Length: 217
Length: 217
DNA sequence: CAACAATATGACAACTGATTCACCTTTCCG
DNA sequence: CGGAAAGGTGAATCAGTTGTCATATTGTTG
View 1 (cartoon, rainbow over the protein chains, first blue to last red):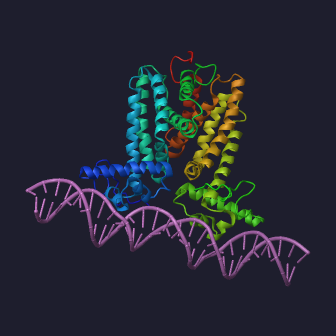
View 2 (view 1 turned 135 degrees about the vertical axis):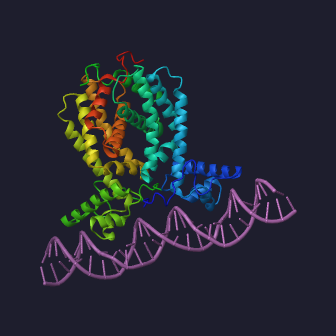
View 3 (view 1 turned 60 degrees about the vertical axis):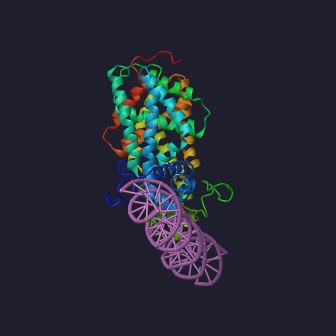
């Protein structure tokens, strides 16, 4: 369906859809639609949400939607890009003052859980995007993972964490956060974030076994 | 939408849809349709896949579908239940002969990666089910997590792993496997499973930091 | 083997929801 | 001011889907 890479011009930050807004008013309207899409996709889900739901929430007519976005799929793309920037920026800000990697992991996890709780749409929009167009999703995690990897590499250099395959670790860590967020920030808040963070910090410090520090191979 | 719990009779193993097959032929046909749905959802995804795609793959007429399933959503439910049983049974069999928890984790992770590689439809069907009906997904992971938790509790009792919040650990571990599977079994097989397993085993044995075994609080 | 139950067929009615388009309103600027 | 560009409208179109049904085939049983 999406074979013709050139037929359906992939909008980028530089080329956002049919017509980028050229007026303050236009920019405002576009932003309203984007926000409405976030809310609508977040509660109804991508497939159940109709363009009409989005435009109704934004308070504009259906046709207006197409002034700024080529279609449903494109607004999703845009949305994930946007939300991705926001989380990354937020998390980065939360861990700048960490004194070492372990502290950064703790702060990062806590901030992520909190962020997800306050912005539940992020999870749903992102996960659904995976099946609309896998590249949206891969881009998100590869961007995320790249920054994460750099941090782990630094920590290794500084001797804060042991040598090892940091790329594999990054994916393991992202998976952990993801599931912990889903279970404890979105489904049921029956365990305080601090306890979750402590449990994971303990895993990072001491592993799972009692008799740590043996040779690993 | 799915408010009326009684209106849309949720099919269970005991009550599978409109009419359970009463003949060997019927049972075969139903199984063919189920398998076809797995393949079709696995490659096209739940939403892009039409009933007609499923019946075509199964080699039956469209109407036949409704002899055994109430609709698209119900066959998905059935499918996840089925596939869930299969993975759990497979993984359980792979770790029975593990001598301790660490070995069980290693074998379990390796088996999971391998299974996902051989049955990529599992991931997609399961993840998409999440947004069709969240309960399908929650049931799967709660069932999975329950068994996992029991194993960790045993390991704690035997002194194989340190005391801690095993429930949180379970979700962290499931998340890890999930992401590692997605990245290294489904997306790119550019890192051998053994190396992944070793990296995670090292994390379990020694944690992430160099100076393990301090007090955790 | 007759009569009945279970299965299977495939055309199609009914519906959903994305996108288009001809036209109107607001804003900008020489 | 006046006209052009940008923004906005919403009814109509159109493609694609689900689920139904009258009918045909296959299997079962007394």
